[in-house]
Length: 148
Image: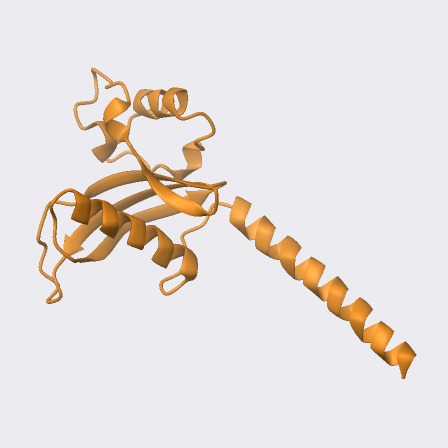
């Protein structure tokens, strides 16, 4: 009986460690959090709170773009009312995961690329470099491909 119990504990511990390893590996890989996932909900909740602080109303977001990599996320969303009608112009946001929570990063402090008047709306390689200078650690893989 003791042997079976010990074997179960070893198997459980092994599975738990392998499971944790897979979770940690998934967090560092470039990904788009699935609809309904805790990660996506946490990101959208922070964006909703930020929208409310800026004088907006309660909204849901149409997610136009969302990529996460190594604790950084780039999201482009459009705020919608409960009927699915846009209530404001959407746009991109940079988020950082630290101390167990997502936060919206202030992009207004990032230098402008004089040859790219759209800035974060269509980030140029130079704009992305400026983001990385201001916020070291931001991975270039989270940014959308340039529009043509």
